Length: 310
Ligand SMILES: [Zn+2]
Ligand SMILES: [Zn+2]
Image 1: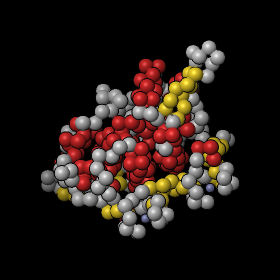
Image 2: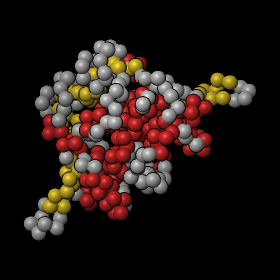
Image 3: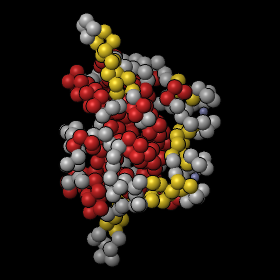
Image 4: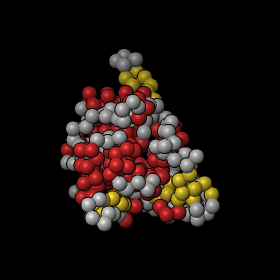
């Protein structure tokens, strides 16, 4: 008998098996921007050859990318998105939107605007409920009851890189790069802290109980999330001192992205238990998330989106 909180966490973290670190996310971002060759990825992600080779292999093994020869000699290869990889486009659009709204990414890394050719408008991606089409709001979801079984699950997670260094960010951008989406959702602890915060958890002790996280990692990630203005720290007790951590507007705005990632896991990976359900209160149906163009309400496909370079 698997209880619901356990499974929910599983579905979310399963996605991390595949897209589970900042390098993989950066490669995917580049793939959606039309980049496909090793040197292009290397130049734009800033990854070392060894790291890039490993991540590309992992993404191929996960059936997110495939490799094909583009030279007549058959010795040069490019990396293209599979259909399953294309399924991550929704999340990628929301990452783009979030970074546009909240960070200061240079235009040669991230295009400043997107254009939806099928409706002729600039594209603002919007996460909606697949059943009732209403825009997703953080308070509109009914979460299953919490439990304390999360830690066991976490120990089973296979990440690409177990020996990760948190601030292994692109050189010369140490602080700012920490606020990139890939740094937040590409680190399993910050992602899990975000998810538990979406569930309404805000206290140090409860984070420990829910996540089975060690106190030094928890303090480190909480400090980071406060530093980059995702969480706001408030003292709710003087003696002994106790703090709680609430999502800021910037933190809350990661919610549609995390839910779109969860949807990809449900749509593309075998889920262990179909009983895992979040209910969309507005329509009473099991939550399924689509990302649509704010102007025309249609789901944008990769071929219908132009990246406007200024
Ligand atoms: Zn709905
Ligand atoms: Zn449109």
